[in-house]
Length: 322
Image 1 (cartoon, rainbow, N blue to C red):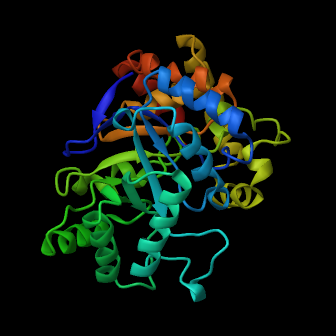
Image 2 (cartoon, rainbow, N blue to C red):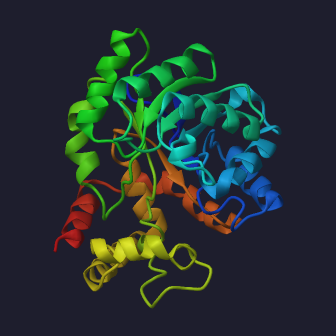
């Protein structure tokens, strides 16, 4: 396993990490989660990601049960605050008010059975809460030792810059990490919009959806399999269709990418994940797996990365052209 710094900061995390959205508590029970997390840890994965909203807190609880099997100094764990699944804005259980940041993270720590998380993310920007209040909430949880670092997820570059400025003004660390979607089909934000952030504040990226919700595996080429992510999440399927990602144009690109994968003797999943790993601004690629076999396949992407020389990368770019 390769280990990378989070941006310019001192924290090091595994280049591949394990996430829990959809899978923990929905596709996997505690026994399955334990098998997958232990195999991931044995393979060198030391970064585990979850969120208060994942399966109404069940994902945090299951992850916390398994983290007890490991030495606390040997792993990095993150959670995200914004949506509490059974809450509402009227009851202060959604958004990034200081009340919800503090109480949401406190509840997450109870489910995880931890004294602190290494990283707390603001899961989405909150247009209904002043940024000064958001930063005040982050200041509280950092000073109380509930989290060591903080970051954002799917924030604009301008908002991250503003948040970093406000954080410095009150004497706390600026956000060190952003968690965006990044894959062969979704690239604009990471490769263009965030460019100015890699030097100052020096953020790293812990990217999600390297397989575009499974589209880049090729399993949706002939339809939507029962029990798959797009079967379980119709709203996600609708979004991908409306955005043009789940389309005939994409399937034509996948045919070209499959030829490149075949030439290298690797799977489409390995090719797609390895491609994300080639980006030096990516600190870690978050994997989402529902079976041990998927994890085993995806772990090999670290080796496949070294096979993606300039010539192969040019072939990939050519395959992705409209």
